[in-house]
Image 1: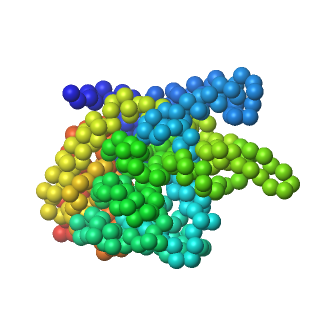
Image 2: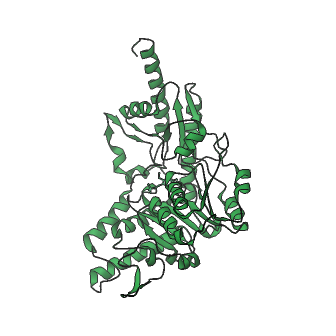
Image 3: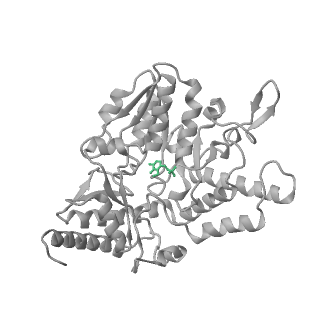
Length: 413
Ligand code: PMP
């Protein structure tokens, strides 16, 4: 049985608009997925009927706001199969989740301890660990990639040492779409006595994130990449680890008792949530998770992969297009360059045709350096895109290539 996606665009009115006089073709879903009406409605209800601060009030609005926020936490725990909602920390996105974890690690790291990331990381899972190591005297190491754009797993195993405290790896590369062998990574790291954090920002529509099945210790993701609002996200952590880790930020809401002599902290997850949270946003994030669940992540992934395969097939047939990275297991994104054209020019010419793609370094400069490139054009379909839109992308590229060749030869096309 498969899910029927024929009416899905009704849920995304934003897709109906014209851009530069052309029907919008939105293929930048790895940056931000569009928001379904259901999510907007959930947030509107919160704003219209419950808007009040949480956890500390004893009046009706505060209590119902608190209940909705905690229902959202429960829904997200269910969404990633956490053992309990105490393992779900609300953050402003994957970047804050990863920074928070790195900050919590500061006091536990000693000179010569090692943090292992990969060359493939988004800067959000690279810079926080690099800076943490600079501050603590720990050693920052990055697993290299192969020419195909896959992790060099032999190098990974060789780089695990008795001093490796944490391995932090992206599940899916935001530049190449490479799906990393995270089960194997978790197993090897745990056999080595190291903790594992997975950056799942690009993985949430690729496969169900089941933290128990994956056996990861921490996981981070962003709301806006799954149809939730910007400025929302989650840091998942195994409860026994969250109990031991110190908080990264201090202030209201995260304490148990404050005296002149010192402070004791609330239990997780509140220990990590300082100040008034993004209540409406988090409720929207849970609504997005429920929306995706109603389709089934496996069917969403199946459709997105079929759209991506079509893009690979059509773009591979264009001689001037050079696809970047050839991983065996690709999901979500396709990067390429057009010979003799800068990626920014390609993206802005596609925009003239109403086609939205991403261009530049995609916050993955170490990976681009390793591949000898300074940027790519990136296409990332979502389940609401159509095969006709992928065809429009290929036709648009053909036209751009024809026109620029004509211009170079002094002809008009
Ligand atoms: N990791 C990966 C793999 C990403 O693709 C992104 C967003 N592009 C992030 C982390 C950071 O997400 P955010 O900007 O939502 O914090």
